[in-house]
Length: 317
Ligand SMILES: [Zn+2]
Image (cartoon, helix red, strand yellow):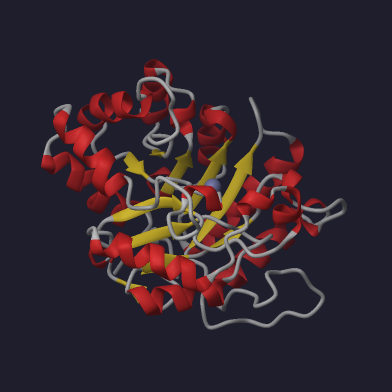
């Protein structure tokens, strides 16, 4: 039986409900927030306030996409407990620029990296966010592997991490969520993961709508991979994200996911910003339905696709 691994427990995929596929609920003080102070999202209380609102608007689950480097699984569990929103927490590594010089992500072998990911999936996430030297496993386990590639291609460093993620996926069935930089290198990511034997039905490429070229998207989707669009609230003129959803949800109904990737506190109402994390369920949903999206497609994108995507693949043991 397949399952989704949340921070509180493994659940049946159909228990997820309406799910945002790429969020940042907690980002603790870290190298990343020192470099980008607006990324700091460290309040359990403010997160719970925002997610309670999300729940009131029909939200059921969120996929957190902060791998090591600011992650706090214990806080995510607390927010989930307080709000009843299911939360998935990843293992994995983000872009090199988010870690200090000499970070272990650039030093370890593919097998060693895979071992770290696998143990966080099977045994528990490190309470110290893998900042070393002591490891203390929390009861929360990782339900996702997050990896990333930079602008226009996958370099050697990133390739090693992709290989490690693929190994961990093949051993555990754990789904994979990737970061694409401005939507680029999506085809390279798909091809590489496919070569490494990953089941593309459990792979989601994030942010691809930042490159809103319809033909590019069709080419990506023909591989069977899923895509996550999260720029609906970012566009200044028109809404290419809306156009992509309208067209492609008809052609590739089971492969489109939505999220906000609201990784800045200035996007959160509870931190005093806007538009707030309920935006997709209120404003964007209304815009989509008015533009002709069916309720059935909405349900497919928000409920059915996340359940299929973020459940563990059958090779899990
Ligand atoms: Zn993100």
